Image (cartoon, rainbow, N blue to C red):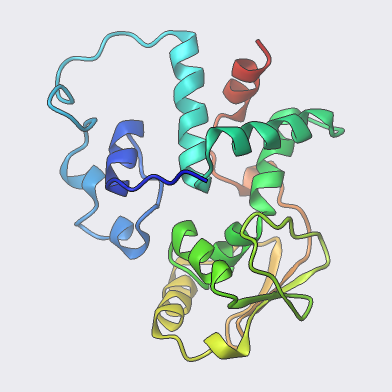
Length: 209
């Protein structure tokens, strides 16, 4: 799968808000949004014209794709699944994205960013119900337990992420024990427990045309 290899901070600047792609840097004064709050490129500071409805829909889709680190084909596949589920399509889409294993590792505080969480999963450092799983897109089900493998307990980067997570706060829909570095997926999150800056209805409007 293709990967974005350029500076991650450019993505945040393009969307005009923090996407939290660089871990602890996003919470410091070194954050690019704090220092240069305008789009990247030589014309980034010029006066921007009014954005059309299509432009807003496209930007929202790009933003959510970048938050969760997905490519277009994979993201659209999630939308198709969400569209066949009962309930509100946009909320279903967010639920599917939140239940990814790499996102779960990030939410548990074992990584400072989803990019780092994906690497931890790929390196066989995560178990689901006691079984090693190295597929970042693995869909964790309610009732399953995600834990750090014993071989990774001494990793300094993970220890630093756990310490930072304790200060940042943890989601309410997960039962997390930072001492043992494991968490239970207790329930699907309610919409008001997720990022209020995401306007998922715009994504639905874009794809349903």
